[in-house]
Image 1: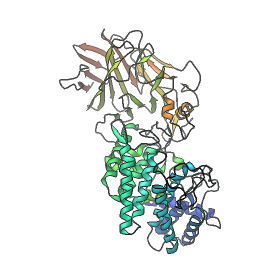
Image 2 (image 1 turned 180 degrees about the vertical axis):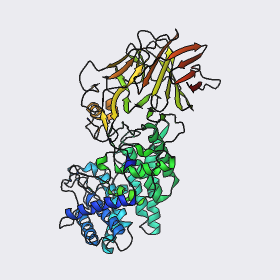
Image 3 (image 1 turned 90 degrees about the vertical axis):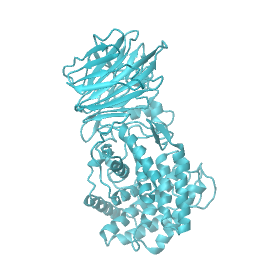
Image 4 (image 1 turned 180 degrees about the horizontal axis):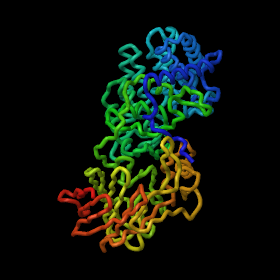
Length: 610
């Protein structure tokens, strides 16, 4: 079974002018076939996310007219724009809308669904989307849009902005992507207003960004990020936020958007595997967006000089939003317009600078969470997630059902690149149930094809083992598939175990349920509203790789050694010399210093290839 939303890397989609002309040509033909006598360009099956969709197709027709001068398009633009202005602009309050500050304002807004009171909660983002479609049309050169209609659209756009920023609370869903999109609305609208009014709108947009978004950023893995549905990052909406930050910088030139985009891009780069797999977030646990992410990933890949385009997309939305039959949907059309207009090309090579929360070389990568515990391990095309034991999640030593991976103090990290090897040493102080403070030293070494992990900890009671991950997904090149198999060896006995109990809080990798489905089943609220990350934290047990201690370790240590990515011979040796530990494998020799670090408390590590 393949993961529905994680398919090919976004930078594999052709992005030449000719490719985009072909995309627009297809949109034009679909639109001309679909248009009703009234001028409606909505997909026949469109029910929700509907208030902006016809206008979105109109904006694409305007762009196509600008690029091709197709004689069929002026009438289509006139009729479809007339439809939106006549049929899709609402000024009477939607019954039940919960976020009004000024009832009966008379300001126009767009509806998430057309039926009054049916689902009013979505009207705020729908109005943002409609205003973005409108400002793209207003950006068209003079003469492409009927002057009277253009004047009407500008008045509606003014009203949309006032409804978003005066009649309702700003960002009522606490969704960073929607909120930054609202800021972009103001920045783009301001350019079409008289100077004094335009400056007021521009200033208001930047102020909203500073006060309502930037001031509420959430810290994760050392980065400050725009909050998304109550969390720091969502792997579907985060890259969309990055696209909005790119457009905000393109339109305004304000460095605040570039700086925050750089921070979000570097964060995303660190958490994303080399193969482009990612999971986690408070809205969609492993769902990936498609073309909506291209602008931001492409724009900031250049700025941070790294291959962000490896991010795997939902390729069914590789060019524009579509319905199940493949037919074009105008929702998100503004992003395709910007993507076509932006001349930035992909940066396609990885950054080689060491990053605290990532180790990456060749086809191997490890993304680390805020506690410097792996959140995803990638080796030989297999992706490993943190396993669960007794409601504890992670990678690390386990004894008597207790997992030693939660730090009790400062976590120190040392990175080395030498002799074709990349390594990271992580030192954590941890406390077990016996209240004894111990230091866990975890060494990760890769040559770009395999990953060696060595974990040393002061002697543990009982019969400890290393929780070495949950094999979850495999890379088929253009698709990511589910798996329960691992290519891995251990210096001690290695076991692949599965939960002994059944139920939603026990995850068996052999089942058909995805991590996303399991996480939502455990979340407090319905899918689409609940936080799957919170749900997943309720997981009691999972499929897990368990490695016994390596034999012949120093008497005062438990030492675990595993290799991800191949199943050939593996006989590492370990020697103690005072406070130093020498680890020798078939690929390298590493010397790990005292857990206390050097004279400045920094971890000590030397490494060379064998």
